[in-house]
Length: 317
Image (cartoon, rainbow, N blue to C red):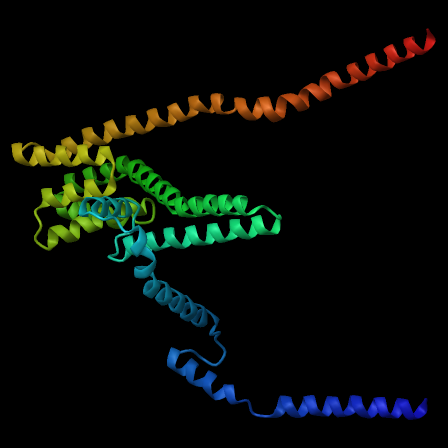
């Protein structure tokens, strides 16, 4: 036993000495780490994790960008009208890059393949027959293919609602800017700067219209393009009012004030409409979840008492 203890202690000591020596040895990656820090302009105490994360994200993005044309080819719209319609939907949702349609279509193909593969694996794991496996694969393929469409529709709806809700406040500020002596272009630019934190979607649209006007596009055309991009009917009416006021020479500030009041009234009416719909929407959870629980709490003791009474009467008889 003493010999075994000595051997065990010697082994532990050798392992400890080896670990100490290894920790004191210069590591080959230290110089590379120092070079990366100096290249990134960081001090020795700063963390490189955010930079590494960004590098990985860029690598994944580049891989997807290279694979996107091949993945999007099977579902690419055949005619120019459908492609323009898809591009308009993506612009309404806030995606204006040239590669946005290709990336979106590639996600549809990739989602369909992933959905079909997962559904087929589930069917195989559940010991389904071959016909059932094919059925599950086709169903998963369809669901995965349509998920990006649902996501895009939801994104368009949210952005349109955000632009619509920000119009009255932006018009109020625009009226103040115009009445203080600013021109319409300068007022639009000022509103876009001030509303960037509160209504970023509307501020982005106003900034794009201002840049287009500065590049030589006529103001009416830039505003019309903004209305088409946003997909908001109230924005189209606003652009029509501004264009008409400029043509007739009437006060733009007065026209904007009237339009702001009308938009604010519509926003209040939409809020009241949603409030009125709340009572109807609450019926389903009330009937399915709350009423059964209330029935059990209220009528449960009485039912138990009746059951005991009838059972006791039957036993007495």
